[in-house]
Amino acid sequence: MTARHVEAVIVGGGLTGLAAAAACAQAGLETVHLAPKGPPDRRTSALMMPSVRYLQDAGLIGEPAALGHKLSQIRIIDATNRLIRAPETLFDSNDAGLDAFGWNFANVGLTQAFELAAGKFANLETVDAALAELEVGPEGALLTLKDGTTLLADLLVGADGKKSLVREAADFHARENGFAEAALVCDLTLQRPLGGASVEFHYPHGPFTLVPAGGNRANLVWIDDRAVLDAAQAGGPEALLAIFAEKSMRLFGTVALATPTHIFSLSSITVTEAGHNGVVLVGEAAHAFPPIGAQGLNLGLRDVADLSAALATSDLKAPGWGKALSVYYARRRAADLARTGTMVDALFKSLLTELLPAQALRAGGLWALKSLPALRRQAFKLGMGAR
Image (cartoon, rainbow, N blue to C red; front, side, top):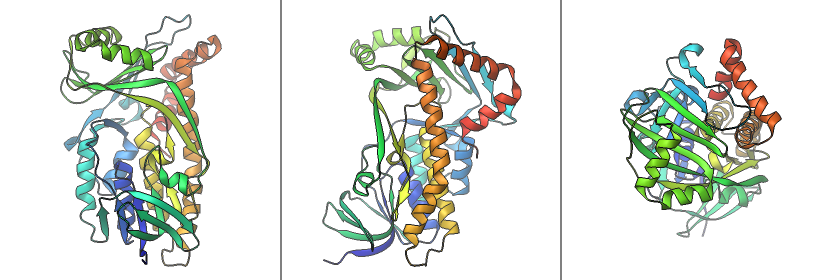
């Protein structure tokens, strides 16, 4: 059976996959998006202003207030009993001349907005089918779907997550690292609201972070040893809420569960290059980090923004354009991926280390950020992904 030729195929139905499919369609390519149906993504994403502006410019969302909740402050509290402790630090978006650092969105709402925007492109076809096999050859990427359909693509975009079949089959080299720590997530109702402040309590095995989700609601991300989280969850709601009250230093009064808790393992993935041979990787197919510094989806959307820029500046009618574009995309992404990976790795290790020199360096860094406005503004730009 002859394979159907299409200009671009996107594999993966998550937020980065939806955004990448819209970017390819907006560039005028005949686009097929392989997006097998899965359960709703009940997580939330804190998107920094550069990501929010990209989504608005790409037509994927309208006013952020219609979908999310403003993040105007970041409060960091060193809750360890270490010999050298960092000062409590409050970062305010006004110090950077901004109304907000970003917005906290429910992923379900973002997904609906992205799907609505993508549905407006007549040249974008969404297929509820999974990829079974992939061969990359001189004519392009040959995809065999689980229903037996075959597609031949000039450009293949892998947005299929940490266990990416595209990354493996297209021979990308990746470094992977697992952690003893895991993350527990849920929504809470607080007696006293967070306002626009994301509050991070830093403990020896990771942060306990409350992110504003509107009104008295907060999204919790608690990183700790997997055994500790499993035991806390197994203790039942009453015991769990007592732990949450203690971890949050009772700053927000009575705490109640608004959703069930979920625990997921932490790992990191880094590719040596994000594109080659007519294949590009976006989102967690290219990089995955612990949820530190709100970098995950923000970095994935910067992938899509660079893919969009590469599409806009490439000759999409030239022979072999997909291969040339993939190499150009990899060059565009290299510095950002290296910088962000180094930053997140250093942040995570600085939270976990028991070495006094590293603790002193972290505490001194927070003192400097607290005391020096120019350094603080530069840190804002780095953390927000401004380029």
